[in-house]
Length: 364
Image 1 (cartoon, rainbow, N blue to C red):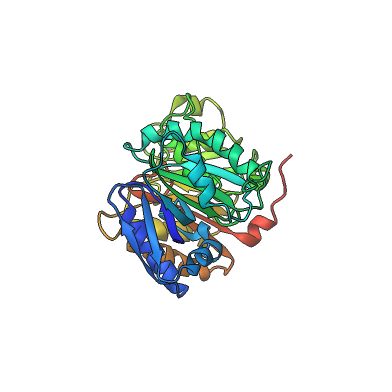
Image 2 (cartoon, rainbow, N blue to C red; image 1 turned 120 degrees about the horizontal axis):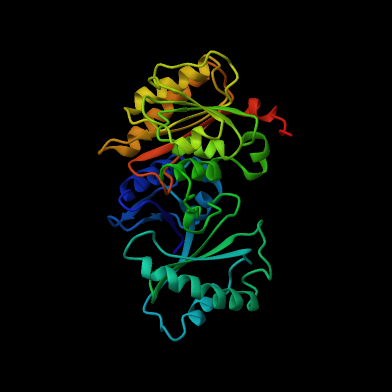
């Protein structure tokens, strides 16, 4: 079979299909996308079966915007006997290279929620039998491929694998976060998820630590400011609205009543710039580029609100515009973008200079 299975946000299947078709074509890997609206996944069928594995290894997952997970599908099993689903699975993958982890998953849709509980329960016995048959290592091994069983119904499963060096490290491609009871708004989870997705955990002690100064544009009531404050940063919150009193009481927040598109800091000591303002993507992109051009920040996280149509094309266009603008400053800027689980009609963009980051030292 050897197709690609791509997870995405329900309702964004066409964007994921357009993205994989374009990115695969750029690598001379050709095929067509099978799309079912609001399904939460896309199947990309390659004309050359060997190219599915090539894409899984060589197409940089971190550069994909609308795709939450990418894996090679080797088998599709239908009409499974619900009394024994494991035996046909083991028979199908008997020639697999030994994998280091197992993920039993389903689509992120309301219809598939009933399958989620089954997937959790099914994982334990399937893992044990896979280990007994030497298809899975005895202990989780990070540098081995990941075995995926993607259930479309309780008797219908797609079997495949992803590469641990080029996939999402999260179950279903979604970081599981708990909403903090003291956060001012649920938008707080957007920034927390972005930190998990974009900033390597081993670098949190230098890039997400106390002592850093941050600016939150369009801050009120403080959902994103909350994530910065809880990490010990001193935050300038720019917004004409009201900030949550609980944040002001920390002594770590300075509230500036001003237009986030106009205000600039008087000192060049801001590390993080974050922004979740609702405006045209082009205006936000130009503002972010200006902050870097003027040396007003060193790392940024911001959202781009998407139009109703041509969402993939609009995303690619704005990221390319930002890339060209930043090249005028330095050729070392890294831009990452992803439609996160907590995003809706938007994508989250992360920008940093790899040379600047490499010079950071851990805070005491």
